[in-house]
Image 1: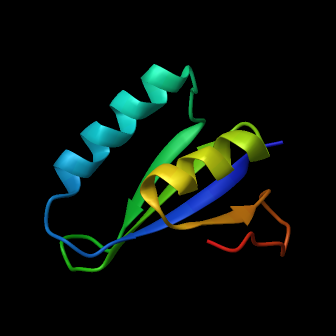
Image 2: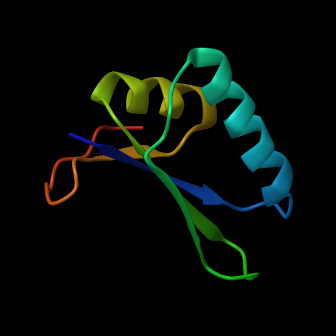
Length: 80
């Protein structure tokens, strides 16, 4: 069951952040299901990363901040 991580991007360097995320994910051996950015070019932008397990989502939040929203369709959220 996939888990969604939500990160608000408040600085202007989304490209660098996405590159760091990709490098970290590769190093961990995690394969995200999807990345989605909303907000267009206006800050803050919101990045949603769908990960396969809760453990992957928690590790991602510990590295990059944000919060685990839970599995799609659930109302649970982990503190973060």
